[in-house]
Length: 265
Image 1 (cartoon, rainbow, N blue to C red):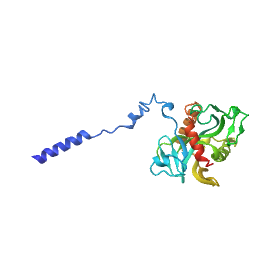
Image 2: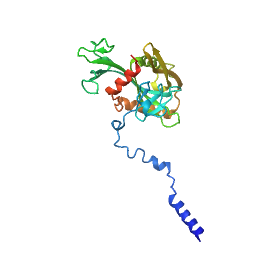
Image 3: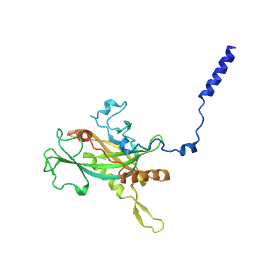
Image 4: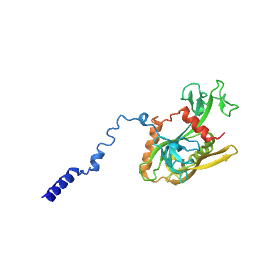
């Protein structure tokens, strides 16, 4: 009797726990439901940088080491080699005007486009480009990218800002982007290719001088993009950037930390 009752109870419990299968067509009818009021301002575009020897994240993230690549929003890390595979969806260079630490807010005083960069900035004794008002300028090269997930998941958007000694890598990267062309099969003419027509592999490289050592970016060409779905995703990201939906949020603490870690002197 006990065995029969137990069997009956188990069968009923299994029936109660059974989960009905959701048809994909039903999900596709409500894509994005619940996200209507979540904007880019509520989430922010993750910033990706290199972990240096003095990065505080080395103590906070298990397994993190200098030379690894960090997504600052979700604290995800990649090995510096083999690095990350990305598509570049847009690029911008800006000049940030900062007040010295201890004065003003944590936000930059001004953000200048290259054409508006003050012409009266001169290099001070501290190595910074100083303005007549005492503030200094910092060049920032920003790459808006899609990072290909190593597990085959949806690519993640990110911003990689290169400053200081990393500007050498940014110039080399931009040279490659600027000199990529596609040929019209009908007219045989060559046209500048969208930046997201080729994958790039980003790794980290240890550099040193008599003052110390640090890690910088190393950029190498990878395969051409052939996946139509990835092309559409990259194009959508590009258009959202041009529409102003993705911007870099600059913070004094973050900027000074990156600059001091990047240049050990």
